Amino acid sequence: MVAVDPPRVLIVDDRHENRVALRAVLEPLPVIAVEADSGEAALREVLTHDFAVILLDVKMPGIDGLETAELIKARGRSRDIPIIFLTAADADVAQIFAGYAAGAVDYLLKPFGPLVLRSKVQVFADLDRQRRELVRSTELVRNAFDAAPSGMALCDRDGLVLEVNPALERLAGRPVGREPVAGLLHERDRPALTERLRAIDGDGDADGPWTAHLLGGRGLPVPVTVGLAAVCDLHREVQQVLVQLTDDRDRRIAATLQRALLPERLPTVAGVTLAAHIAPGRGGTRVGGDWYDAIPLPGGRLGIVVGDVAGHGIDAAARMGELRSVARAYALEGHGPAALVERMNGYHAALGADLMTTMMFAIVEIDSNIMRFVTAGHPPPVIVGADGTTAVVRGAGPPLGVLDTWRYEERTAELGPGVSALLYTDGLVERRGEQLDACIARLREAAVRPGTPEELCAHILRAVDAEGADDDVTLVVVRAEALMGPSARLKLSPDPAALTSLRRVLARWLAEAGAQRDEVGELVMAANEAWQNALEHGTGFARTTVDIELEARDGQVLIAIRDPGLPSGAGRRVAADPDRGRGIDLMRGLADEVSLELAPHGSVVRLRRALRAPAPLAAPAATEARAPAGARPGGAR
Image (tube, rainbow, N blue to C red; front, side, top):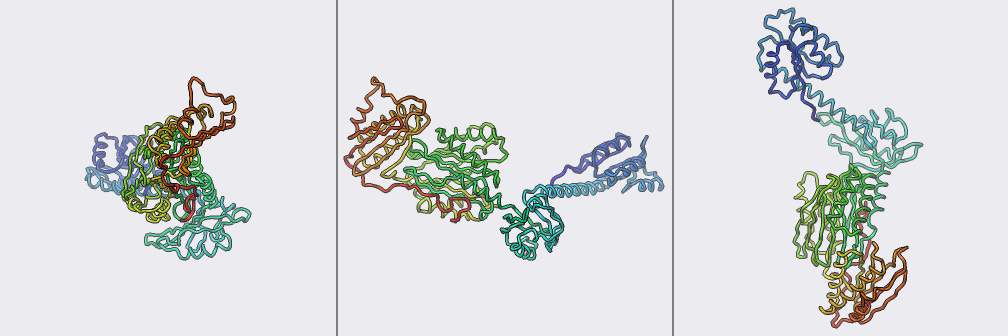
């Protein structure tokens, strides 16, 4: 039952000491005692409040107790309030009969026993509380029935409609009277509903929801999900059946929206391999606000977002798409994890959003073998070592929008060669009746398995029974590879952090290609000079990116730098200040060959150098591919 306020008891007596004594008697009971010192005051109280019982003194000046009782009983709202008369021991039988005639349910003679009075009041207080709980529960059920977005029909055991809610009549496009509920469906779907109505038992078993077609306005079929729930008596006997019909079109629109807003392909990032999965819970009957994104960042870094907007349907999917776009924009602006999540928190709060959102943003830095991340009310990442050990890196701020301002704290995790990070939403691990720590322990156990990230992703989904989850399930597996591969495609922006990262990434790639220490230093210096020139003279330090291509071939390394050209209206490309430099001379002194293709719409600088002891060619660490089979909403693994 729902909670209600404590019952009220009205104490009516013209003598203050009597009211004090009565209040003391009632003190142990969970009731609200209200005092009135006259019949007139009692009537005013009854006009404004409901009472479980009234303790009414018979002999009072002005309007006495009998007249007060008659006036209370004459009013419709207060007619059924129990009245216990209190009178002196010398009351005659005629007076007592008069009290009963006025509407009293009991009569106590003074002095009365406190336990007797308390017991009588307790009975009426309990009855009043139970009555109000029942009324409130019925009201809530009725309001929920009327306001439910899904169509609902309460039927008898034979499927005859007894009541319908407004949503069902809107779905059907007409008023629905006392008619067979099966008649609302397309002719070919009626036998299935009739059969399930006959089969439903006291446990509500009707083989789960299924898809059918309701005859909407003008007789056009509307795809709906149909579910049955038994309404039973105390003996678990089915008395009625609640039939729920949910418009499938909303789910399809939400699924299409979610599918369109998720990455079509996982990006190629040198030194990192990715696998991802996202799907609605419970066999794909609901679509919610889960999302993920993988964003190649300037400097050879990788940004990963995993988020979860509470709720399901079009609203959640639309909000998800909005937040995903904003998060990607902030990431490409160059914000670190803490700064990005704080901006997302402010954005969410400014929306006045009533849908709670959790998220994680991580930056994988292959040059330093770490992952920096921030979580906002989101499950913690699981780190899987190359030796099979697992660890959970905890520490989270509140979900987005809970507080207008919050200083989120950045965490780091080692992500060396062979180490994987599991980023996910709560639908992957949370199960009804289980503690979250136990669910995460099951995830950690499933993560101890050799294989590619895609194989690990598939194994985890089977091990945690992702298909049986109530909520959406999202999992992203990120693995740092031992080698970047013989070729790499990188980007650079006018951001000091990106430039520092790119220098370290190039040094790692050159070392893997077999460059000696002096060769690494000289080539990094030459490339850095080319990058600086591209940012200054090729883009005017605009918020754009320069493309970097690395390739090891036939014992040589080749580095190409392509700028997009100056922004429109920025004027023509100008030569470098002669007092500042010898950039091209420096590059030619450090590389075997330097070639330049200068053009207003974009230029290319190429550096080539033969290595003294090149390493054997290695296969690329990752190749661009579509997201795995289960990575689309509703996809099956």
